[in-house]
Amino acid sequence: MPRHLLRSAAALLAGAGLAVAAFAAQASPLSIEVDTSTRVQLRAPAGSVIVANPKIADVTVVDANTLFITGKGYGVTEIVAVDTLGRPLFQSQVVVSAGATGTVRVWRGAEATDMACGLSCSPSIRTPSAP
Image (cartoon, rainbow, N blue to C red; front, side):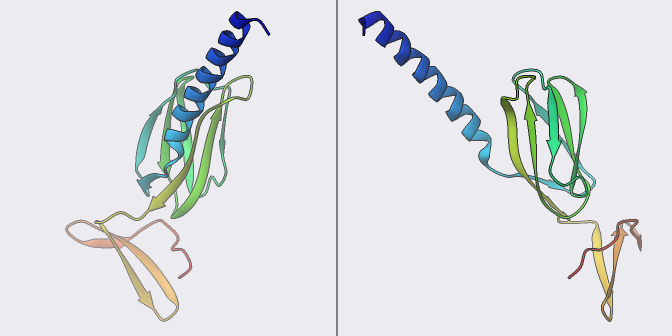
C-alpha cells in the first residue's frame, strides 16, 4: 500500500478515535431533580431524540441543536439524540431524584403522600412511588 494512503488511513482512524473519545466523555450519568430542567447543547443538528421512559424524564427541543431535559418522576432512564443519518450526538443515562429540600414523604400505614413544603406543606400533585 502506498505511503500516502497509509498516512490518510491513520489520520482517518485517529480522527475517529477523537470522536469516540469525545462521545465517551458524555457517558457519565446526568443527574437532575424532579420538576427541574437542564440544557444540553448538541454539536450538530439532531434528527431524532429518543427518551427510554418518558415517565421519568422528558425532552423539549428548542432548536435542532438545543435540548432541555426535564425530570418528571423518580428513577433512571436514557436519552439519545441522533443526527439525520442515525449517528449519535448525545447519549446519557439520566438519574432523576427528589432533591435535597422542599419535599417530605408522609406515611400512613402502607400509603405514602408526598408533600411540597415552603412556609407550610401541601400535598404534591406527584403520585408517590412504591417503597
